[in-house]
Length: 119
Image (cartoon, rainbow, N blue to C red; front, side, top):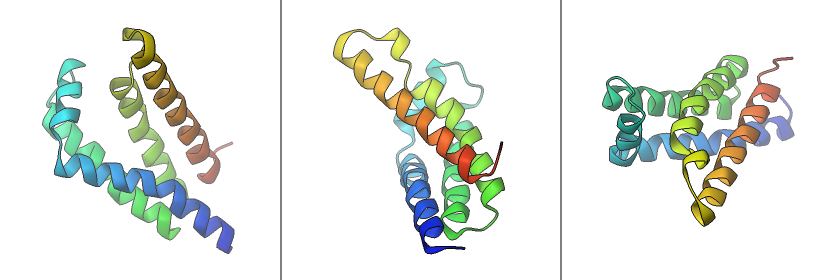
């Protein structure tokens, strides 16, 4: 693997590892959002999603099973984005901030699809 690919994958993975660890250490805000979205067993769902972010993020950062890791991270990003950044329910400045985060996550999704080799 080239140095550039290794660095790129590690940098892309870093946001998932950081957020996954943060959500495992302090799950309450994410659990509240999941509960508000009527996710069944929100505590378990947050733990699983956070674990996927940490585990798959580490695999991606190390260049191990990048297609599988990228796919798992992309899948974890869907509920994270829809539940965590519902800009359509907001107004004013908060709407703009949530829309920016939503679009950032879409960009991350695209990057994951690229590094995963999905055409």
